[in-house]
Length: 236
Image 1 (cartoon, helix red, strand yellow):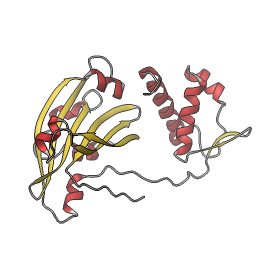
Image 2: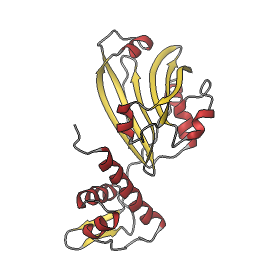
Image 3: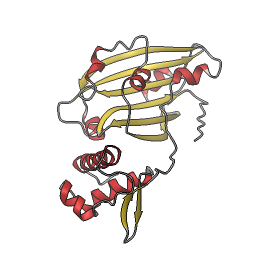
């Protein structure tokens, strides 16, 4: 279990977003020598550990060159990074030659449960939209989508009709993402999965959890459960 508090995570993301903004919009252009971690920690009112973590992740994005004793500079040319694209289930299914079908099982707007508030760093009383969707191939359920959308960050979600187009397709077309966290796991089939996919209670299920943010604000968290025999292949 992570030892970081919600406040720590919020501060870290705020710092990272501001560093990215200064690099992409100014005043930290290519070749700029950045202030020291101590100076930045004083400016942002946080610990050097928070600054170090934010700088490390921006460096991993290929935007900074960190050298011992020489300091940290903005790279003259960003290092080429693998690009991640949110996959569309419609495209994935149709590329196999199967007929795609989408159905909305349930939709409700509620106060964010405590576990989700902690996960997305939401303020107390924040509202979220919870959607359960099924994606089918040739009439057979292929993927169960259990999605939460931050209504505060994306208020237009309330007026969107999800009976014809899935929330993932709508999100990809509506809002970009600046950060994404993905987890892959084998979990025991819960009642929701058993009800909609071909599993018995407790069977191992391949599941993907994905959370996306835009400029420090959490947009959506989703758990995607796949039918038995699913295989995921990716290339970068």
